[in-house]
Length: 207
Image 1 (tube, helix red, strand yellow):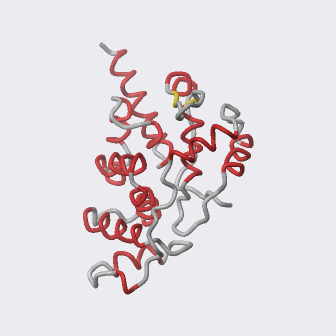
Image 2: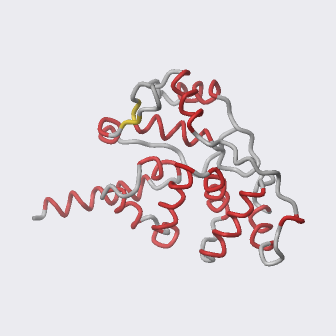
């Protein structure tokens, strides 16, 4: 399977109805459909091959997400920096202090990272030594290496350190509009967002 991911996309009817995305010169599509495309566009596993627009479109239909045409999927992929442009990482590229940080993640990966991905693996692990989920480290590093919108998604995850509180803070931030639905769905924090939504409604109802 080309897109074994850290999470699966689940969107509530309310989110699909309220939040939409419009690719350049394209029709609006529900946020849940866009999140599914984004989830599949950049593999969650280091070294995994990039799926084609046709493969992603067929997978959308299997998930009964029929809101995007093949052309829309192609437009969205055209907007994303799906490759970071750097050469594959080798031992010669690493500082001695970075080697254990990178190699521990590679021991659980299915492929070799690019040089830029390896840089981000070391950077994230140095900044957050308590982040022991190496699959998440790899996924964050792949997104960060590609920059742009994908790097902004990584920033949102790292800001709220969801591995420390089970996603409570990032769920609350999503409810407050500070974290995008694409981040919640791509990185697997739907349950945390749902809990934050229920807590907000309960608090509002008790007034």
